[in-house]
Image (cartoon, rainbow, N blue to C red):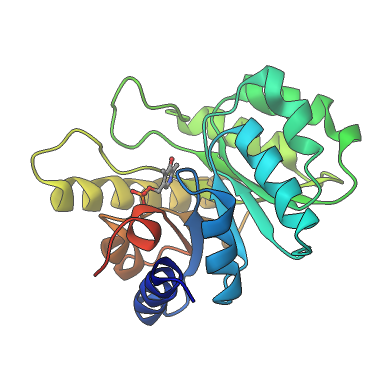
Length: 229
Ligand SMILES: *Cc1c(COP(=O)(O)O)cnc(C)c1O
C-alpha cells in the first residue's frame, strides 16, 4: 500500500470513530480517481462531488475499474442545463443541493431520464451569506415538499446546509447555522405530514459539532484526503 493509501484509510478510521449513527459522505471534488479507489478499498462506498462533469467522469471510471457499487451524492450548486446529464449517472443515489423551486421544476420535468429512485435534500441558506444558494423561506420549502409528495422517482429525504464560510468564530457560527436548520426542519414537519426529515450538515472543520447536534449525514473532503490528524 502506498503512503497515501495508508493515510486515507487512517483518516477514514479516525472519522468513523466519531460517527455514532451519522453517515459519512467522502467528498472527492479535489481527489483524482486513484484516491477514490484508496477510500473504496478501505471499505468506503459513499462519495460526494460538486460538479456534474467531474461526477460523470469519476462515476464511469469507477465502473470501468470494476467498482460497481459506489453510491454517488451530488452536493454542489446545480445549473438547470446540467440536470439531464446528472440524472443519467447510473449510481447517483442522492442530490443534496436542490436550492430553488425553479430547479425542482426542471428536475421533475427531466425525470424520464431516471431509471431508479433518487433521494432529494432541499438546501437551506442558514447563514444569510449572499453568494450562498439555498431556500430562504418556509413557504417555498413547503411548496417544494408538496411538489415532491408521492413522486415515483424522487424521495424527499431531508434538508441540507453549509455553515457560515466567512467567520471569525466558526464554532459559534456553525452551531447557529445548524440550530437554524433543525428549527426549520421542525417547522416544516409541523406544517406538513412529513416526519423524520434527515439532516445533511457538517464538513471537515465543523463535523464534530454537526454530529453532536444530531446530523444524519456529514460531508467531509479535506480531512480524509489532504491531511493527517
Ligand atoms: C467541498 C464541500 C464539502 C467538503 O468540504 P471539506 O471542507 O473539504 O470537508 C462539503 N459540502 C459541500 C457542499 C462542499 O462543496
